[in-house]
Length: 85
Figure 1: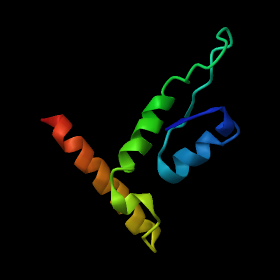
Figure 2 (figure 1 turned 120 degrees about the horizontal axis):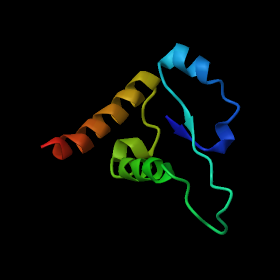
Figure 3 (figure 1 turned 90 degrees about the vertical axis):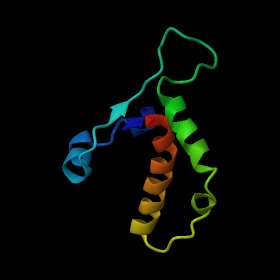
């Protein structure tokens, strides 16, 4: 899981024990000036943009978190199937 510097204090061991996720904090280079997007951040922003194409994910229609997670998984499966062939 990629995160920006705002999540630096998050205990990575807890995420691994609870969810089996590894967290990687992406930090900006100190020698650059002006606006420069963080590496790997575009991956997250692009994924959120893809979710915007699915009506059911735009609003919070689901009452249970399990169903909401299932909708995100179904959307990602639908996005990834054409890319594997």
